[in-house]
Length: 274
Image (cartoon, rainbow, N blue to C red; front, side, top):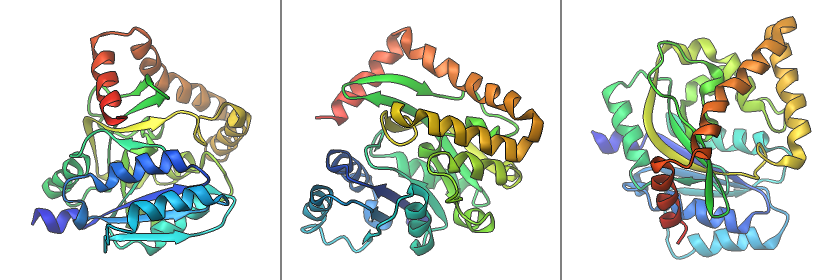
């Protein structure tokens, strides 16, 4: 029964010109326990030769029947992600972008056990840790279960969404290049509140410097965030933008204090980085 449930999970990785990041990400996924029972879709929009070479070298000797690797040239992350969702067969979609890695080998097993306890769940999500080269710098953590989901509290790399909800809400909008996940969570808020589970455990190490955390692209992200919030909340959009920022502050200051838990996370990250 557990294997049947874990087969309901599809993981999608999108990548564009990131050979080092994609190596870590793929290794992280294929090292998951029961991986051969999980569908893995890699959508490669790279224009360089190195990224595709790394992917092919990782996969050529494995003969994994559950891996689908496609080249899909596009200029929008969410076009590639939508492509992966549409061809996936799983009931739940987990996204792990190039450069991000799972916290341990049991992450997908924890998600499957959560689904087994409550098959009606529309979304499962947990905590993520941001890292930068050889350090952990920020934590996205919710201290307790909420009676209602705040869309600003859902970390996209650490969530698993029922595919039917993605289809119902017309997937991710390709109108936005960075913040379409925020737009989706706001569109699907009613569905996600209907049945969700927050796993108060670390699920993903997320690499800083990617599309959503790149300093050079920060002005674009701010513009898209504001445009999305205005489309959903009209004249109250600035209030919700401030709220979005406030939600993230505790995790930023938590690791800046460099307490004992910081050392635990750092040691775990360094272990994965070997």
